[in-house]
Image (cartoon, rainbow, N blue to C red; front, side, top):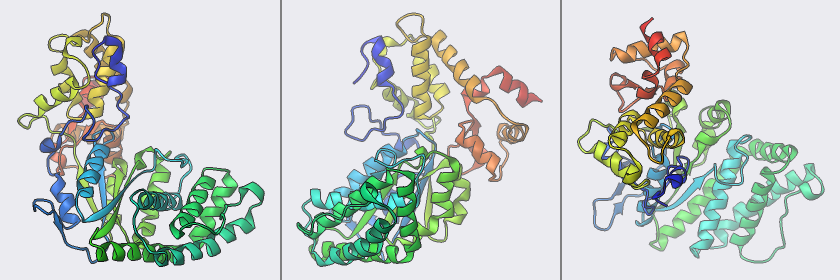
Length: 431
């Protein structure tokens, strides 16, 4: 709800809640993102979205697309929009999976957990849509999973820790739903359960992948025969909220071969701190950069003003404060909202004025401006508009929002103006 009252501002600028096109807070920033547009994704997926009937050509091999960008710059909103737009075609039966909002322990998670969640989401959507799928397309995967995975897991655990198979009644789809839901529930349980489930699936991963692929292929064949969809697409989000960098790297980079084994189309968010590892993904996937909004583009600042005033009534800002918030937000939606939220806390009167915005910038800058000598050397190159090679230090500066990137050229990078305004940081930069 839009803040018409001063004390409603905090809720209105909550920056951890993504919005879709149907939300009144949604603002379309796509025209102001350099080197990115929806059409890139549609081309990868062979969708002619310009055609009246939204034509698409079936892909001969499954497509994996990693979408990388800053936290809070709108990737989830873009993916929700893409899910909706693709869903209006007959090209893909699309399943949106947010691993951070489900019953998975993001502080202790592995690739297996995500694949089980994907299966659960797929089956749930098939059930919700009343999809007419034959029992034969499900029974092979169900019987293998029940016999080779569930029964082996249950030999290693006792009592309530066992995965329930359920009674042998109902549709084959509901039976498969039952064992997958039960598996996911146990992955949210004890450490012993997690280890046992992961061990059994990982030890049989080649066969798991084969059965998974046969299941998907059978569904796709039925969709095509009935003129419903050409293929299946999973859109998997939320990796940035996985507990540690090591876990994110293990799943998305070190164990990426598991996503390669699973022969289904996927769009996967890639945390920006792993973007420098993209060469390790290029043999089986495509990586696209989702950049910040370029305020130098005509109309961009006006669009940010719209973004702010959709959330907070103009009467709650002093003259000039919105302009300053936009400048120091630097084309980063989440940072823009963080400035407003901090200025709200610092405001002495019931209005966000220049003074409270300056205080907010100072506080946020002090929190972000701690840098090492190695980082300072790279930041000096940024100031001089020099070409910068990819490195862990460079990537770390981007992940900490100290360097802002607006396109694929490092020469266009800037130092975050909030950080640059910090007095101590300026001293480091001049050394």
